[in-house]
Length: 170
Picture 1 (spheres, rainbow, N blue to C red):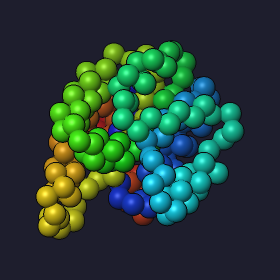
Picture 2: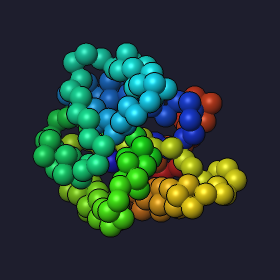
Picture 3: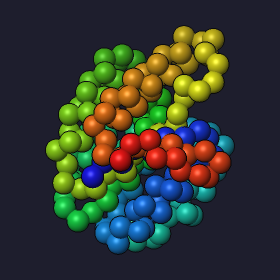
Picture 4: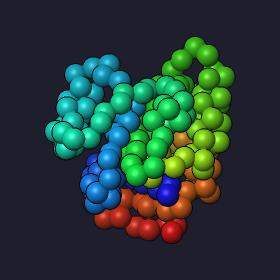
């Protein structure tokens, strides 16, 4: 089962994903893609850490998500990835511009083969004004493309707003 949960900042998407993982009564592996580059991000990470049960296994993987998923995949577990837009940012900031394309292709290829239940969390970035900067436009474009492709292969897609989930697929 592959679930994609989309929403804006503070929309409730992470809380929903964590509740889905808790309700599964399965072993949970939490893959965090964030990197703590400043105090504000360190505070965000700390907040998320306090929300998670201690029994959950944590893996921090900012770049090579597909390889990580393949390595830890097994039946009777949930893998929660939070979040894909931070992962996309990490890839886009690298000097190797091909790595973003390669890693997205690898992710899309590996997801349908996994035995674990997968919950992906990502920020919906296409609801606002078109960004002025080139890198910001590329981020919005690449995130939007990834979300569309993930939505096609996901069993369930949910959009969160103001803490309310809206079922889009499944």
